[in-house]
Image (cartoon, rainbow, N blue to C red; front, side, top):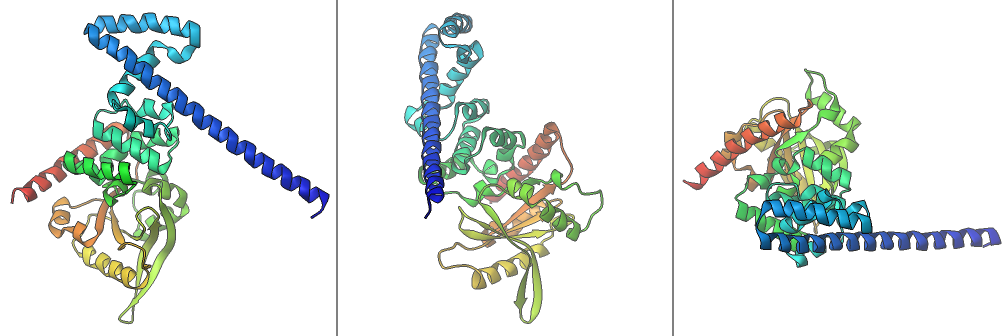
Length: 345
């Protein structure tokens, strides 16, 4: 190794040490800032609760903020102090929140604490942690109503909490936290009329955006996966692998409403993949049938979960958040009615 190569190697090694150091410093600063904000919020909240008057709370924030800004800058604005109080109210247990602020920044928490329910806050906090979302990604996921589109949001609250507890304590990601009832594919720019081959071609052209919509952990394996069964050729539209679930994901694309016949086709593909493509350490494959529209009662009657099959509706046209919320609300009501009907039998 000549002198030039030695110098280049030395520079590269030192640069790596400096970059790692800068990252550790940034992480330490983030932890310190977020911990400070939580403790400040806790202290102010104690004082406000003692007085039990809303006017007093507003007055004390104004006065305290003015003094703190003079001493420490704009980070202690009245609005930010209010967020610190909400932070403590959303995450009251120091032991739990301290594990989160090692990976989530204050900016992450500012978005999460605005969510209405504890279940939503836990869902986004844990998914943010395990999938290492940036603040922008978190904001996009909330705006696209990710929680409302996942299967876990339709479950009874206690069951949903158990799954989130597994994720929190053991980093165990369940399929119901991964798969959605609705997939927003407005980035495909499809015309009003299109065939299944057009849908597949558009997805492959926009594979990066499609992977983002599927969620972290998915990797593309094959298109038109060929399977020879009884000397007959079959072709699966798309094949993916999910790193966290440790299993193959078979995706079939359908134009129009879900049909009961799709179950048998997907079961055949899944059994083939299980027998011929699955490694010993991997879990059984999961099938996702993507349709333009679901038939909820048929889906319930077929008990697709027992066959490791999921059904999702795709949305190819942009929908304002209000219309998307309305669509998801109607779907949730229908789904809950079917669940109640099934449980009452």
